[in-house]
Image (cartoon, rainbow, N blue to C red; front, top):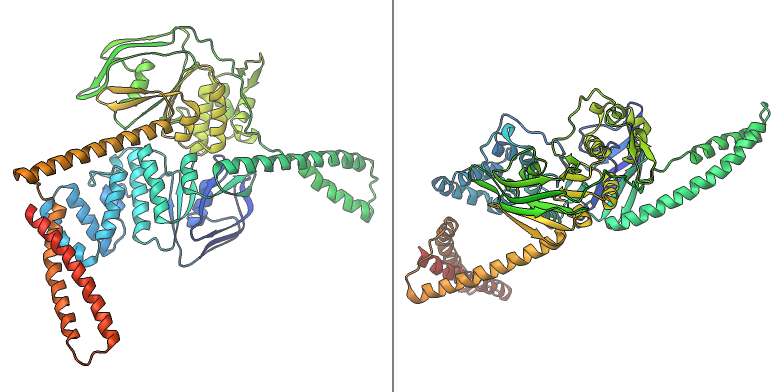
Length: 627
């Protein structure tokens, strides 16, 4: 089924064009990743498709049977309502009853849950309720009566994601799901679950993401917005990189050819008399086309930055028997570690286990309860925090960077000016004179990163650096960090970024326990899943032994769950109904006027009902023993 057709779509803000005369099609089942630098129109294109913005020129056709759902980077809520009212905002009998059932579950109100069971049965809402329960559980959404306005940014993002998935899950027959950075503020377990969910749901997807493993898992086509054009690549991110490199090489050869032609034509133009013949007029018109091609500039994101890093002495950071706790939450319990020059360490763990506190202790922004943290005299910290830029926004980008330093020293002995350094991080000369308050969220993040690196630190602390950064900027950052001689501490859920850069991991397990894992993030996830599997096998073995002992002794009795109680009640209604149906069919068979085909059909139905009755009666016996 055909979903969307766009022809010659153009959009500009002021004099700055985002994209010009782009055309594309989206068909049912397509899974597309949209990538580009921050500020060139990814989010704007999604808003145009969702109807929240309009194109300046061009035509857009969306099939009338298709519902367009948009998950935005900055989700919008009814701030005066609570979590459950924002998630279940659609007024429909099934949605309403599931909303009530989820509230009763959240409050552990068994009486209300039993009361709602009949209504759930009548509406056939159980299958959808199972899906809702899975979404809320996997995204760690609890306390449904909290006001949305009191939640953190990460909680709001997860609630918005749950809201979007529940909406499309309720009626996603013909839905175009568009997602703008859905993995921000999700931990790895949630990201892996979302990958599987999107693949199982078989939705039509247009996705903006910086997470390359996630991109490869859910998308099979990549669109890139660059220099006002839209380029389409089939296949994986690796294939996109190869094809893009080949395209740029071809374009560069074309530009070089145009430059040679331009030099010849320029010489001819200078010799031309003012009077124009038809022939010379045609050649002059062609000259301006050649000039435009010759003056094209392909932005090179492959630049390398050879840093003249501030000298790092032999003593870096020593942590000896460090203890730290907040009330009853233990962060560190006798932690010992001595950092070495050039170390690259990843920090992972669930929210609330003390990762940010650990980073603050290292920088001496907080004090330990006991133990020693000795910082070397030559250590200069560079801290990329999640708080973002702290600057008056009525300042131009170039002025802000120059207020830190005019030049950036290079290992070769030379230096880069502030303007050159900005251009390296994909701020064009025009963008450098833009006021900071007019930058996109991703561009502000890029500027924050740039200013930290411009101070030339030798110990970098990066707290979720990939959130809101575009893939071209990430490529520049990764190459910078690969050549970086200092120490790097990275807190991130971006598996690709971590795998490429870190040598080992500090795994915060909670209660002050920190495991030093010798490997990459992906290797740790494989190890962790193996441990979970072994634990499940051990638990299953233990449960089997207990059940066997209970069978022998007859002293251990399992308590029936609410779900099993409900199943038992349902069986007591279903079994008599099936027996009645069996009697009805048996009576039909005794009719002397029945023909052979009907006999065969009724006999088959009887066989199915007898098998079903046998299964349900056996289950009824099992549950009645528990009762």
